[in-house]
Amino acid sequence: MNQDTIIVMLKSIRETSLVGAKYGNHEIGDRVDFAFSKDLIKRLETGSFALTQKGADLLDGKIKWKDI
Image (spheres, helix red, strand yellow):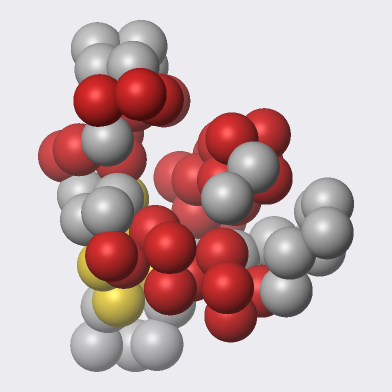
């Protein structure tokens, strides 16, 4: 999975609780599945999304892409 694609999606989730517009060559479902499998996001009861601590740490530079 492309790092930039996931970072853009995580930023959108942090700011809006939504996955955001398509970016790159990956379908939305692929991006969401990847983020779930790496424990970067969680789905809320309302159907929107939120970052996990790991996802927030990745955006904040506390962990590196290679460590996810």
